[in-house]
Structure formats: structure tokens, C-alpha cells
Length: 213
Image (cartoon, rainbow, N blue to C red; front, side, top):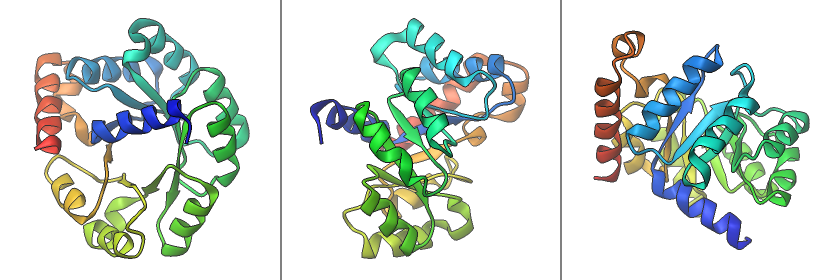
């Protein structure tokens, strides 16, 4: 692993909780991103499903510089991967075994997280060179499923995503998660609808403190 990749992996691991921003318009996603940054998050995943996601990535990079590690998720093919990398993504995340994007990511000094659920898929992700294996959807199997996978793949870094909350993330960490991805559960829905920034920031701070506790 190159020094830039090792540095990015260390930063990703240190985050413990990665906000996964999946919204139907860029303005809402941008607001969610700024709330997360205000709460101390230094790593964000922007999903490909956000309209104009590469423009949003560039805007966040221009505003926050290298202090913010930015990834693009829901990457399904080489075309999306290339566009994300050209925009400056620090890491790519696929919900599935998109093994063709691994070498492309590494060539750009970007990390690659591949999605898996079964032991066979975890092995395939590892063989493809994935830096971290994303267990998705996590809540389908729950922490027990993750613990079973960790028992036979002790050297794999796992990131369960999908249904992870502040209340249950501790059980995922105990089961062997290196970090977790949390989507809309990271933001109280009523506070988000009201754009109650102080309440949202406080909520994310509590989640981050619990993850590092």
C-alpha cells in the first residue's frame, strides 16, 4: 500500500462513523454535509444517487480542502468510478462486488470499499484487493452475521452499513466492525426537516462520542 493510501485508510479508520449522505437533491445533501462537518466529522460519503454529486464533491473540497476526506458511494461501474476519481474522491464505495473499480481507485491513490454479504463474496472482495469490505445491508443479518464473518476473516476490515444507528452501532463494533456507515439515521428526521442545525450537530456529536467511547 502506498503512503497516500495508508494515510487515507488511517483517517477512515479513525472516523469510526462515516455519514452516508443519500438525498434526492444536492442542496439538501450539501446542508447535511455541513452539519456533519460542524459536528466534527472529517470523513463523508456522498452517494452517486445525489444529482450532480461530482459538483457537490468539488464544492466541498474547495471549501474544506484536504481537512475533509470525501468518498463517493453507490458506485456500480467503471464509468461512475472514473468520474468520481476525476472529481477528487478519496475513496469509492460500492454496495456490491464491483471488482473492476479496485485497480482504478488504487491507481488514483484512492481507497476502495466493496460490498459483500456472504463468505464467498467477502473472499472475492478480499482477493480483488478491496481495502475495506462493506457489509450491506447490515441489518438483514445483524451483528451476529457480522461476528460470524469476522470469525473466519479476522484480517478483513468490515464496515456494516444499512440500518446502523447510534443505539445499535455498539453491537456492531463488538461483533468486529472496524467502522460503520450511518445514513439518514444519523439525523433526527424532525430536526432535519426544521433545519434545526444546533440539535442536529449535538446529535451527531453524541453519536461520534459513543463510537469512540
